[in-house]
Length: 463
Length: 169
Image (cartoon, rainbow over all chains, first blue to last red; front, top):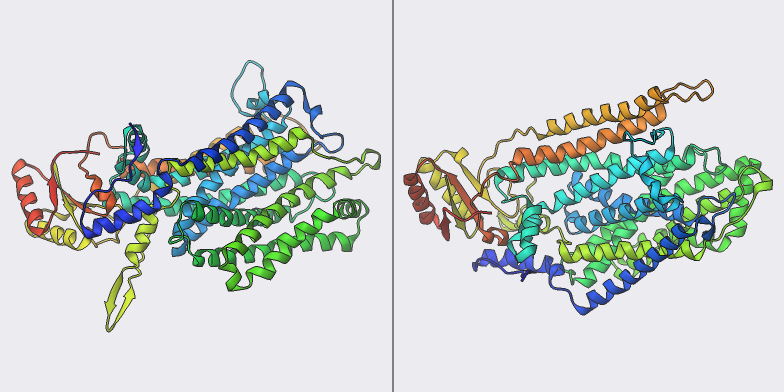
């Protein structure tokens, strides 16, 4: 019999207090309920449908997609850019807050870092799905072979492959590093095969003074290393577009614009996940309105930055009125007016008009609406960057249009379900809250007497 | 040989550390086991220097060399002349070199961290699961069985809930 017992050791007041915190924060690892199984089944069914659609595409050919000449990049590449963007913020927000020692970060760290790992994993599948001959994807890997093939590093596809591999490995290690002390706690509170798995993953962690000292320095170093990687990944995805001579893409603002868009999308997704986790695992005591208030401020700043970058790009296109660029823009504005309007509404008007107000930032319902709509808008933004531009590329005799087929829509929807399923499994098997981090904060919030007052002890280590 | 005392709270554990030092146990032979980190000196003083960052730096240098050799070396071995542009294009070479440097630096940081921590340990080490639930462990390295008895006595006098000389993680 193997289970996560949540059993406590020690019966003294101090031990009970820490044990209670462990119990509450590790409640997500309790044996699954029927609701959990039902959700896992639904998500699994959608993923299975997506796998069927993918198999159908492999068995026939790419003609079952809506891709055509000139629109050779469709929903797969839109999804790729969207998921890379989503992955951007989890690790980056966590790393920035860690480096700036923002204490309120602690309850949201794990949710954000796990989101990065799963969304970049989903993102990494889309270029392979888009390849057409998916089974030859390993041609990207440089190794001596009898075919005499060797990848051409001048190809932007290879830059993506290298950057995404770096980011997947880096963000997984960053997530693992953060979980190390919590895996030891999970090891001590479980039995059977789960205990053996956690024991292997915890690597014999005991929490000695030396281990903590090195661990904290390593966390800071990893945070400093992962931020430039995160920025580079989305910049390189932007290079896929910006280094071409396609009107609307060949723009110097693209890399920073993509990075800002990615952070916008990622911060909104972290807020959405915080709300879901808070409700699902009854973590209201740990994910408080203060956390949503702070994340709301961050989202407001990023929304303003995104709006600035977007309108600079559009205004300059409009003022210059270069014929082909203007053609692309006016085609996009005329053909896709409703979704363009929704994008501007959800990405600019709504966040700026709501997140300025503290009361609204502290409202869970408002934050859920704003954060979900921002990601809808960001998906539309990716679509509007790719599809209208390719539809009206340089040569008028090659102008065309695109609408995704059922195969593409199925795979894109399955990606969302796959992400949800991975997150669901993760939350059941691993601590979804950064237990040691939150408990450390609780310890340091202990009050000390100073004169006649009792004040919170706020001790910060030199790292 | 080691012995481990389990304490209810930080104050009692800190008192035990002081008593152990007073009883003649050198401070570098005493360490604390906790499930949350405490600032330096609350329980024991730690070695401020750390060397694992050098492993990360070495990883970064090896990664940069690997990335450069892969991208520039490929262009060198399989030259593709494009207009009058250089055979080794600085743009892709820079991107691949940078990504490999960062990847290897990150892996180096993790490897170096585990090496410096001494994890995973070669043999079993003393531990008690109650530490996860907030108890504090004070571990003393000793040279003989006599010293184990002496250390245990000091810790029990200082308020240890129990002492352990066997039982590993």
